[in-house]
Image (cartoon, rainbow, N blue to C red; front, side, top):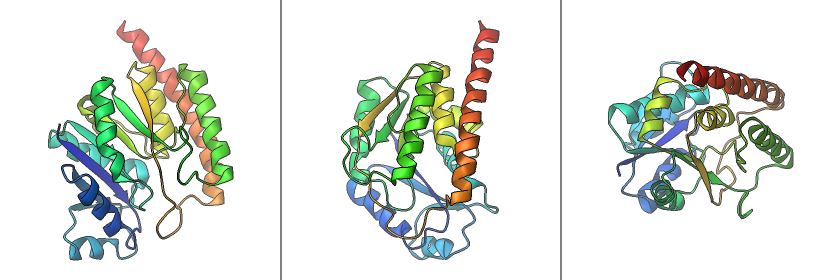
Length: 237
């Protein structure tokens, strides 16, 4: 299977080289593409100086737009699977082959790398863990499926989901919402335990103000996604 690593990056000049190096060392048979989301620091210069494959977006589109750009790239180049990895060094490429094996053996559509199955590595902050547990409950309530790490940005998808996400992908804090959409459409999502690291540099883009917005917007988006998908399925029956 031809695999592509999609790396959304916004102001990751200090971490992006190590992130790419991690992939090159631990998963050299995966291709990669960095989506530079109109960074205001030296990310673009660093990518060019180190000859790192990348796409420069002309405006800041947010995490959803950057990731969807990667899926469009994967779709057009006919990759068999694509995995999202953060540009800040939190995700470990040593798990990529295990995730691909799980995707094939379980005939799954998405594999999520979960930090909460074995509770190893960086577990995020206490406040964020509360939010993650809430989203896990919400997804189980809406879909009947338990996802232990619904906000994980380390997610591997197959060719069909690449095409689906290239056409439509949530623009704002997309991970929980896209999980709801896939589950309501009948796609198979599985998780494997992974270890994550604290950010190697920089600060999270999610401030206190954005966290409040996140906790309001994401549940509403998940409810709307569940209702819309149910109506869509009824129309097609």
